[in-house]
Amino acid sequence: MTTVRDVSRQIAAEQALRQSEERFRIAATLGADIIAEVDIPTGGVVWFGNVDEAMGFERGEFPRTLDGLRERLHPEDRNRVQRAISREVFDHGRAVSFECRLRSKEGLYRYWTVRAAPRSDGNDLSKTFVAVCSDITEQIVARAEAQQHRDALAHVARVSSLGELTGAVAHELNQPLAAILSNAQAAVRLLDRDAPDVRQVREVLHDIVADDRRASAIIQRLREMMRGESPSRERIDLGAVVREVREIMRSGLSMRGIAVLSEFASDMPPVVADRIQIQQVVVNLVTNAMQAMDELPEASLTFRVFERGDGWQVVTVDDTGPGISPTMLATMFDPFNTSREGGLGMGLSISRSIVEAHGGEMQAEPLATGGATVGFALPPSP
Image (cartoon, rainbow, N blue to C red):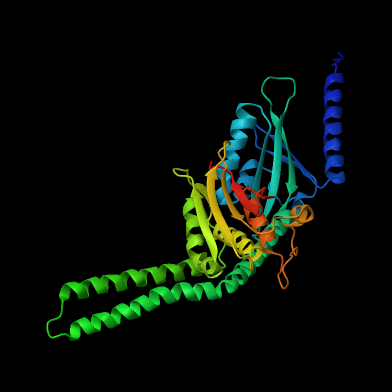
């Protein structure tokens, strides 16, 4: 008795599977990406591309299961990646994208971006999903190095800006120090009397404490601005930051005969930013404005802090100098662009880098009444 069985469908399915695998292999060979096909019920992984070589393993050594891959994930990424795949791919049958870190054989972590999507086989519930994985370690490292260079350059510019303020700082410190000396001498004289006036001595000592705190606050603000530490984002009061810079530079403005005006909006919400970096931006704006008004018989500078209609917070510094020419307006934020003899031309360029790193924008325009307004805007906090 002869049994005849139609296996054409099975052969066709096997051919389709081989063709699919071949397409994956060709795609992985032609591109820089590595493709993984995951069997959802068993958790088995089939790799197309040189994943073993990329991760420093011998051929076939890199994990071929989801559980093995999970062990290779950075501990901080494991739960996040597992939730994303489980929720989007397994439960809802949707595509998902994420970044993660995988540990190589040497124990170092490499950065990967993964785009995963379920592969439908005609049923409602997919049994496999395909993930396209790209090694982005070099881009991440290059980005980090570039940020380090920007931070180092910003620190140099910050110290350079403070060097220009040396005279003003000395004058600012001389005032509380002179007051401390004068009050201390007065206290000695009061105590040398046959009947010391304790009440007066107490008042003098309170004045000494207040002046000492004032000098300490000045030194602390300058130390913070000169720090070369990594940026630290926190919720800050933008108006308070501008007021601190105004106090630091008050003596320098006064010695140049520049009148200072201020317009600060009240009840503005905090923004998320690095306080020291934002101080540096404001210092750069004020320094440029002072230089623009050098040797003018009458000069004034106006600080403005307000909130735009779209919720962005704006800081501007207005001056009564010669204004900004159209050619200068187009290039004033470019590096090494300066109209001042001996200037580096880095202040506004670094300011733009800092503001844009905060998701903000720089702005500048000549004023119809003469002079210019230069400033920046920061987006509202999430």
